Length: 304
Ligand SMILES: NC(=O)c1ccc[n+]([C@@H]2O[C@H](COP(=O)([O-])OP(=O)(O)OC[C@H]3O[C@@H](n4cnc5c(N)ncnc54)[C@H](OP(=O)(O)O)[C@@H]3O)[C@@H](O)[C@H]2O)c1
Image 1 (cartoon, rainbow, N blue to C red):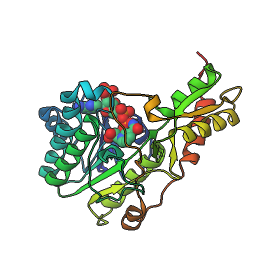
Image 2 (image 1 turned 135 degrees about the vertical axis):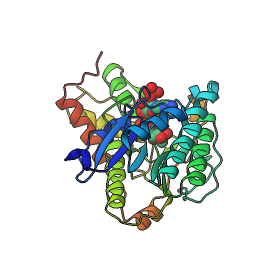
Image 3 (image 1 turned 120 degrees about the horizontal axis):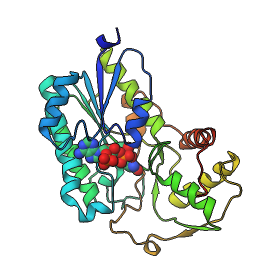
């Protein structure tokens, strides 16, 4: 019976977002995940084989080269995963007459605006990763008519390495932390993003006309890495994950040099998206508490 349900193909099945998507149960569709070993999206033949095997009714692309700093010295790999891969998927989707939901990033912007970035604001990535993601967005827009390009930011979840996991681990093992306080953005829980992407997939598969185009999906309220770290540590302590809290001292971007430059303001405006897609903006603090509670219940250790 399940075999007759429309297949939603999720690429990047082993990533933070991919794993969250595939853990969901959604009525009326069947989720099929493919990882790099079964479908390297940079390889057009692998994409073709995957389409022939699974005959998807919709594709969610959660695969990406996400090593922002390493991308500076591996531009070809970033291009393959973030630009060529989405192009291959978009071509296969267009040929099959199905939509692609493609996830992109706040790093397509240069961060110089002093208010939240609108969907149509001028893009100007500061590094190789952002440039490769922007190229991927363009390929998807130009290649597949039925597309949602969904930009998100500061992604965290239960699975994989992310800022939340790093802060809890450091708080468990150090007496004080120093965290950048002059970059602003919107933390986004994979659980919220996955739920919304799947709800949109279901709406499409039930015949609703979605407004194809480029949209934003990010948590609120906007914050800085330093403030985010303080909330993480307070909540991790409240959840019983760490025995004590530790102070988090603000530093500047200049105090913490990295190979890739990051946008100072990468807050994405979501008002237009909420109105067009009839969705609401999530509060990342709820997602944070959920992730911390799951780690506690699973007995995840942070002190070693
Ligand atoms: N993480 C963030 O803070 C953040 C912020 C803004 C936007 N985003 C976007 O959100 C989306 C999901 O990110 P995430 O945090 O879930 O990333 P992630 O945890 O790094 O997962 C990405 C997955 O894609 C796989 N992958 C890479 N290249 C591939 C290829 N050529 N073919 C097939 N699979 C490939 C990776 O496999 P390997 O492990 O084998 O490389 C990994 O499992 C991405 O589009 C990312 O650009 C993320």
